[in-house]
Length: 269
Picture 1 (cartoon, rainbow, N blue to C red):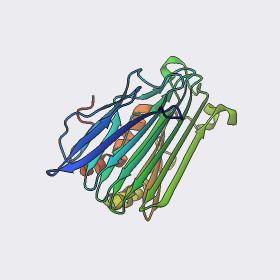
Picture 2: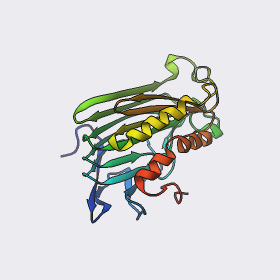
Picture 3: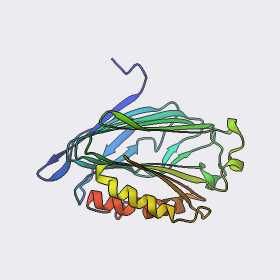
């Protein structure tokens, strides 16, 4: 029997074996493909790809991720996640991270084409000793083709719980129905929210908060951070995707490299 919601369901599991993190299950579901190349360092690396190059029509994908106790996973995308013209698509990620496990979820920015509608919900469930860095980045659209703020609606939601206790419920809705987008974005066309959570990143979260506080508030890219007992939330606004990427690497790149034992971006392109 198929999924009554109409969503394609994919599954990914990473375990710790002989001191290494290994992918023990990678079940793709069209249009999503999961690619797991060999990796240096302590973590498994998995790339999300798409048979159609992005979300088309009414594509709906649900990805369930399990990071076992002590295992580490870098979950990313092959390229910018595209939502094609007039698509009405949705994506869901449900990740469970065991004690001492670490998940770095850092896909490339989302780009919604003209008329596209996209909904995304990400849920991260951490054991008490688990760690998370989750990057949710998006842009004004296919700007080089004249499609700047031309999409119909984008709704993004991120939820984090630690030991069953909710610590974050983040929601962003971007729609021209609420007013002209270009006029409301202050010259920025690329944005990111970074969630840093859990004991493995406690020191990094505090240090990042201090660094961001010293950053000039009116400088572009604009960076703001809020530090909590469980971690930190960082928000970045940049004029284009390239300076957004540079700011992300400047803010969290060191913490990610330390957690993974290698730089996953060194050989991505």
